[in-house]
Image (tube, rainbow over all chains, first blue to last red; front, side, top):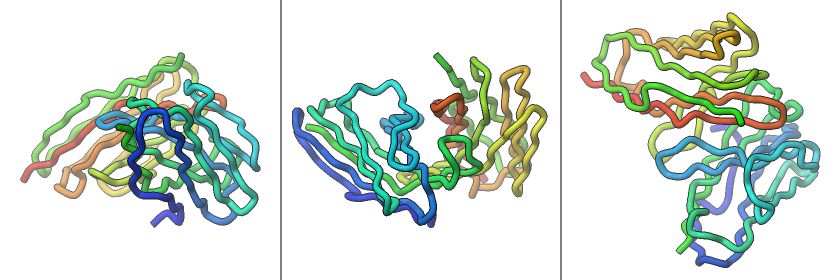
Length: 115
Length: 109
């Protein structure tokens, strides 16, 4: 148990729809990162938030956006869903600033299927 | 663009044997992580390596980092079935984290 929770566990959407995924970090963890993991591949870094501001982003289009709240929760929003967005979405929290931290604690993930 | 390559991608080994997984990366990195992922589960942090020559060990796993060669290794000693999983290395550069494709390890009796 890492103390990081995600909801929902599974989600089915259709192409073109919008989705919001949620993550609750450990108390005191000011950094949250989001990853997309397609089946059989390594996680791909989407973006990272530190103290409610985005401070790092991978190669994902603007239709992937996020929010981080003062209560250590965060959201990943994806607009105009495409079939290739089907994946496991992982959030990870850490106590340090940004990715310069000893350990990231991963949540169990949300499995998104786009039909 | 940073590239992270792991090899082998698949590894089947017998219990009691030793083996090494390699992680090569293409640019200067701030730090390197190793993770374990069991089927259908999330990622578990194993090691973080911060500097050239860093070595960390936990049980039958030992990780090392050579920043000059841009190479990290994960060495498995006397493998047991419980080590069967997929192992990822991840390299951190300014503001980004890049994962390798993973090494799926199967340990057979």
